Image (tube, rainbow, N blue to C red; front, side, top):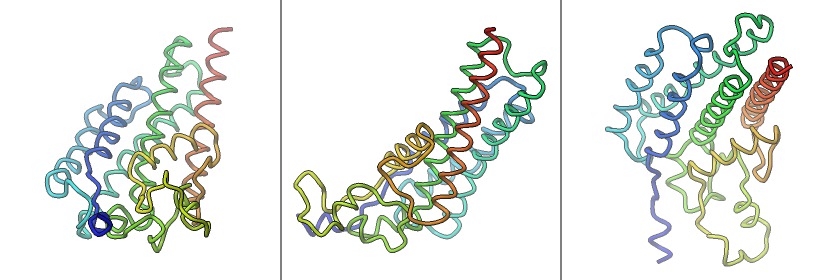
Length: 230
């Protein structure tokens, strides 16, 4: 049993793909003034990369260099459109007459869409970059064996504490996409790390950018909503 669990355990791509599609769906349903160019551009670009990846590499355990670059490109595309929406939202603060919403309810919905997209986007970045990516993580026995780990999860802290690992902790535990999505959610909500600590400078930088975008979105939406109500 121990031998079987130590074998390569690849992650499926579909759960990350759902996050990508969710982010695109949230983007294309934003008010037109918070999107850039024709509304079909974003889904077309995403599908041009996502469909081939889903067919050629449905699991992350033997990525070629081209596949890894394509995976990063896919996340970069979604990130570009999300940042564009945030910038347009900021611009609307200085030009209220050209704002994206005419009611507090619509404005709150718009802010929620951008906030959720932000969580999807950074969850994808954390998943794709931590420990050199899902492919590299698939070839280690446990998360503590990842040479270039960028995040320290609670299970890893327990394993390296020097004490006997409690039965409730899987000795072969490795983070998967949902763990990174949860990390992104907590950072976007608390504007700071919760139970997962960033270990490298790029991880701290990404978490800082995510928290900043979340803070700006919440602040602008609340300010504009109060202004509209009053």
